[in-house]
Image (tube, rainbow, N blue to C red):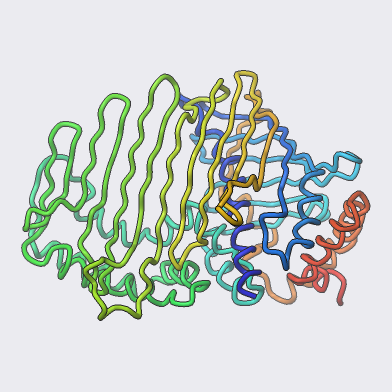
Amino acid sequence: MMRMIKMKRFLALLFVLCLFWLTAAPSFAEESPDVYSYDFDLRFHLDADIFPVRNRDHMQGIADLLNMLELKGNLTYCPATDSFDLNADVIPVTNPDASVSFRLYGIPSHMGISSPLLGNETIWLENQFMMEFAFKTWNNLKFPAQYLALLYPYNTETAFRKLSDAWNSRFGSVQESASFSREVLESLSKEWDDVVHKDYRLKYWICSLSIPAEKGSVMETEFLRLPEYVLTQVCPEGGLEYVRDGESETWKNALDNVLFSRSSSEGSYEWALSLPPTESGYIPALSVRKETDGGLFSLSLEGSYNLAESAGSSRSSLPESLAAVSLDMHGCPVSWPQDTRFDALLQIGGILLPNRVMSFSGTGSADGSISLTLSEPYGAGDAIVQVLSCSGTVVPAVPSSVPDFSADDFKSFLPAFHVNDNSMDDFIHRIRKPLVLGILNFLNELPARSCQSVMDVLEDHGVLDMVLVD
């Protein structure tokens, strides 16, 4: 069971990486025009041999399916309205007439999903409730939807908004060197204490990160101790000091320990968070460095929440690492399209994250063609094996319209995170015929092994029961 869960965690991570790359395309632009628009035409290849032997037949069916599909469409994004519109077709190359189209559009807080499979009905997502939904999905289906939710930036921003608002109300406007008294920290700690115990969005974020781990409750304990940690560990005496010198800035405590530093110069930017151990003995650390040269950039990120070596045997019952992330990227394009070769190495671990080492490599051309490969160590000797590849084109396009959405645009549709038995029964009744016919038409193009794998997924997660049982 645990191996199956780990496989699903890995698949969720792969999906997130692909979706992140696709939706991040507008950020490649060097300047900020009124609207970005890209046409994309992509093919994928998944190697099933990387998955555990007991699940390999099932994954070979999924691989056969993915390898015969083409993803084609357009992504348009408007920074001024913070709106995006993704229209795409999933096309079986053996019969394009059996393609499945869908539209995903909206703003960070609200998104709509529509498709002929849903009878052109629209489901809308109020994303502040995505964490709660992901939490319930794990509890009921053991599918790690929380990884999708955790990596969607709006959800993390929402979860920590009250903590950041409390900080910004006291320190957010500081522009010049300044000192802050102990009383200011005590006020912050008191407000944070109220947040960590009462803010349900933060609680769902913590729970969503913790629930797959056997000792995930450790992270919950760390968060609950955050207000006390500020006063007893970060600033055991005195207040805080902010020092600014040109483009460099630091935050120090009364013991002259640097807690945070940031600096920038032409072509480079870096910052580092360096905090003392928590009461349990964990050391929070995070650093980022970015360098830009000749239209290309390199990025290095190091983050960890590990038990200090000095913690000793008294904390032997605690996991050595709650989370650790390392990312090194080189040769990535600042603007797109561009002739370039780029690569990245991602290492993640700790009890709260899937333990993976993955390498990425790719090439891009001025005509918009792109090739990406994801690999990871596998088997005896940890030979590097290709897991997933993607190739095709991503080219700038003239947008047919400028997306400009608001929350009110979605409220007449079915709210996916607020359904009840009556609304769901009515919705299923309306979409049952197009959904079943669309799935059958699509499955008709698949190899038998892929067909069986898709049906297994639909059955395992209750989709068949939902649409076929009255």
